[in-house]
Length: 81
Image (cartoon, rainbow, N blue to C red; front, side):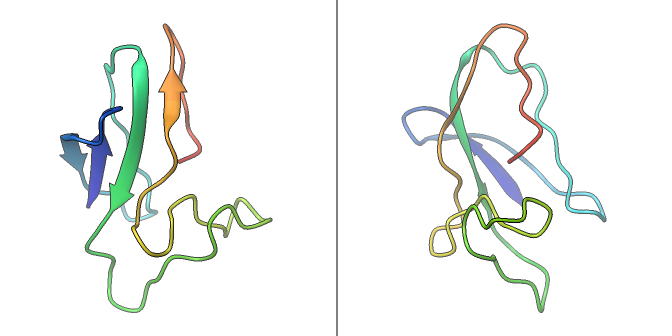
């Protein structure tokens, strides 16, 4: 489960990942957002936040399951969190 939070930390949308762990929120207005991950599959854990290898490192805090805030402007897209 992936939860999208607005700049004040309130949840505004949720989705689930696909079989590869990918997810997408579309049509977001300009603003600042973070995401949080819950209900990890059995045997899965967060790796160190912002580990050296982007392919295996987690962008989520290992304690809270939430990412840092990302600010999106008009036409921006962030495919990294």
